[in-house]
Image 1 (cartoon, helix red, strand yellow):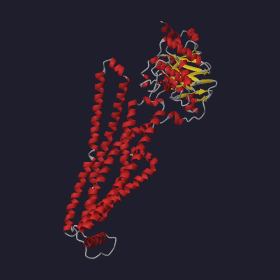
Image 2: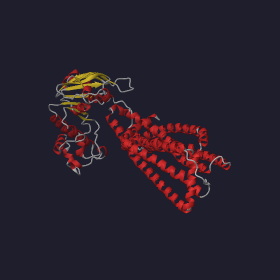
Image 3: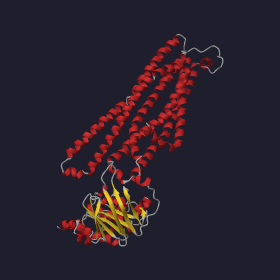
Image 4: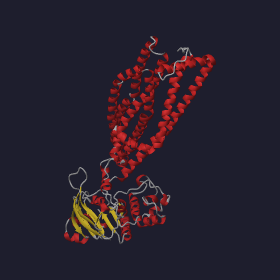
Length: 605
């Protein structure tokens, strides 16, 4: 259970609540013990079930002396005050101490609540923070639905484990220790008998717990795959319907869901076995205690009050033992969830941990790719190899080539979504790894192939990531991007909600908002990854012209499939299979009559 215990370090953020929880649980145990273990013998003596001694025993700290002293005074007050008066006083005392015990129990739970919820809050914040700052390459190995499962279901399982663990290390152990000491004081022989037979149920409980851990991990994995499939299905609902594949998707989901349900049924079956198993063994032991104790009482080997006290205390001990074992099973179940959460929290942040740059990125002269090669993890072949070129400040550079040539990967390395496997990228002679990530990325404005918008207003989407902006600047950026025309026609203008992933807007409209978002930052370097792909010819020309006017004196790096949009570029880089095969201006490349000229002829045709 090392993983779940590792997550318990979050409890240290709530030291005050932990102290108060321990305090009130200890008080609860003592008040509860006094109200039960002491009041029952009192009533037994008052009712005459146990005779009181005629003379006050000589005082000592022995068990018999204490019982004799209590019995003597109870008999004395019974004669002087009367039976009913003593019974009323004892009843009032019983109610008073029971009230105190339950008040302490309530406050114990009261101070446990902020610990439990606070730990889960802190853990969820850390998981989300880690997911947000991890390099983009991390998400190629994890499906989004599985990550969501870890942030919801797995953290929910950890919440119950934290609750159970706090119970297991604070309340229940205190009750068990205090009750056990009382039992030893009452009859150490009976306690020794219990210890001898205890290993048998404990071995059985441990085996069930190990099985629970294995099945819980399988269940969490299957739930992650189930949610990943559901998320994927929702994102492709149009394709599913257009291909009449609804039944196929329903059958796949049903199969996956049935498999998850079967696994979780096994988990629940083993988890629910804790309480009845514990209670069964406890009742067996209690029955043996009553039978043996009764025989010892009849032969005057044991005082009747001792047997009554032992029986009552042992019966009260069953509940915390049962809770303790249930908590143990919850921990075993939470261990599987903790393992999956720690897979995220322990993921290495390559770009931020190995290279903690602190310099400010100030682009003044040139950008260089020097012998850059790159390959993704677990991939033997290079995605990029021996990339060398220089971009001067103010140049407009285009990168062209077939799909899969490595164009987008090249931009990913430039903004450090990943780092080169070999070689380096420099800005004004400084390795970009020496710059702080925030400074490096603030110098770039990025517009990707996919028009990524949030379910928020048009204004907030354009200003996303900025805290200090003016409405006039947003409108100016939208005008440059050619977005002001359709924004003004929207129901609420710039306050119109774009919908989930911006689906309330057309593809061209979404892309123009993304361009406006990049322009608003007035970056030194503008990166366009097929930025006009979703636009019609008229809007494409309009936006291309607007960007060209707005970015004068700044550097533009554009990936383009439509070669008509990059004819005026200062430099065109032609890529194929991860390598640069041609570099030059449009006319220079046409004169070479190579691969670029071939692409031009294809698009012209």
